[in-house]
Image 1 (cartoon, rainbow, N blue to C red):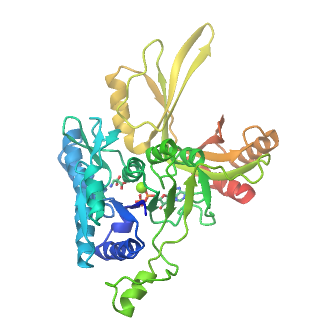
Image 2 (image 1 turned 135 degrees about the horizontal axis):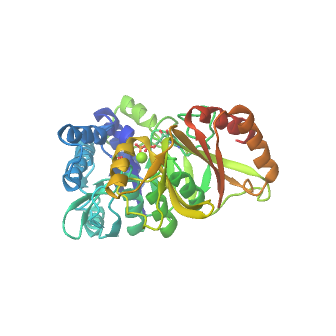
Image 3 (image 1 turned 135 degrees about the vertical axis):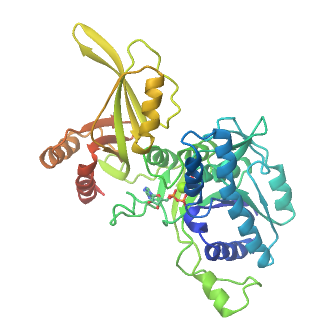
Length: 416
Ligand code: ADP
Ligand code: ASP
Ligand code: MG
């Protein structure tokens, strides 16, 4: 029997009731004989609430103290889940990121994992315990507590799975798989059965927050298959755990069997490689665009989280000048403007808010009929200028926010 890593996101652990249901699921899974490591996020919107508390004190909080604060969210969940398992007579132990051996660099707020010394986890698994790990956190070589960036519990899960050489990593979330567009925005979106690592990486890097992009990088590097699914609905046969005595308890557990989700693994399951097709669309909203004049200066190492950046030379005879087109989420606007002025950089900020839409697909960036048809729809239906850019396995559209919906609906109607 092997090791399985299961990760439960914020909505999946938002109440004691939901945590109890996860414990029932784990009790059932434990009977199958695999060793189980569980990674949990903070309950519901806890991380956002902790952020708000800090910002009530200061707009420029110390990053070290922020990490001390934010890591508390995941610690609450890990202890509550462990208590819920123990109530079902299942042996369990909870660990912080540091106790789990997740060693990171010292970049508070966005630390990168250097290595995982998971020997304590292995020891506890050998004792037959379910090990619960607080996601999104680690410890630096200087013994400081760090966080891995928003959405980082996915990365904890896949990193642990990789270092423990687990058989698989299951990511449980509030949707039952990866869809060909965000199902909370496009109601007709369809679930995808399989994606390659490269395809998922493209989607995660361009806005599909269903998986943290760094989690996909780990999976890609270590060839760790991921399954994205949810714990809702469908029947679960063969339920027999002794702690689930009454038929009512059995019924509640049957309601919680996992759905068949989306598998992300190495192979690219293309059926018709020569066909022009869009496999999925990702989108990032509330994007502001800054044209920053760089001239002959260096591009500063910005602290603000940058969604995308293009560097280009703008020619206006007889001069040429180097510029950077920087894409930032609206919420980081003020911080970025401050950084630009600290670095004495002049810039122009576009008035509008934009949506960046990325089309993951095959042949679309070489098929002029496709590009021409899409362009013609946009030209005839949108008033504001747009940008279309070819990428390796996709095409990127930058559209003024209020016009994005009709373009996404068109793409969905025509190609998905
Ligand atoms: P968790 O708290 O479990 O980590 P997240 O909120 O981070 O969950 O990710 C799940 C959300 O990702 C979904 O609710 C959905 O709105 C969003 N999402 C974006 N793109 C996609 C996609 N292509 N398929 C599925 N979900 C997507
Ligand atoms: N709790 C953290 C966040 O909200 C990490 C995570 O949920 O993955 O970003
Ligand atoms: Mg997430």
